[in-house]
Length: 104
Ligand SMILES: CC(C)(COP(=O)(O)OP(=O)(O)OC[C@H]1O[C@@H](n2cnc3c(N)ncnc32)[C@H](O)[C@@H]1OP(=O)(O)O)[C@@H](O)C(=O)NCCC(=O)NCCS
Image 1: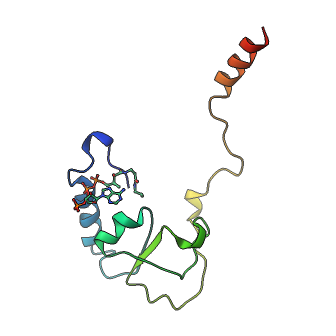
Image 2: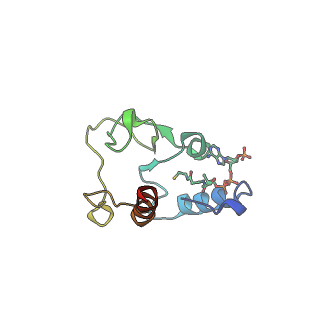
């Protein structure tokens, strides 16, 4: 979740999250979030040891709600969210221009 910087700290994020948590599809289910613990704990999320989140060292930012935490398994993303295997180069053209300039 993200709120545009101009609109942060005005209650927008809280409204969005409370709206999401009220939805019938999720309101009685076990939920997980990966994000700022200080923020999500305000809405009832708690740090969890299980399941294991491989994207977050020691589950430091991985929190849950209504999670009995008894079954050991590893979280993964749906295939639609799989990231590219190779990191994408950013600003490679800028770096190349700078390099060319410094070589002159
Ligand atoms: C985190 C974020 C979504 C919060 O949205 P927002 O509209 O600014 O939040 P709200 O105005 O509803 O703030 C609600 C409460 O959370 C607090 N809060 C806001 N951002 C916080 C943060 N990063 N950590 C801890 N508390 C935070 C506010 O101070 C407020 O506390 P209060 O009720 O005691 O006054 C927004 O700051 C954001 O987009 N940040 C960048 C992206 C990000 O970090 N997303 C979260 C990880 S997924």
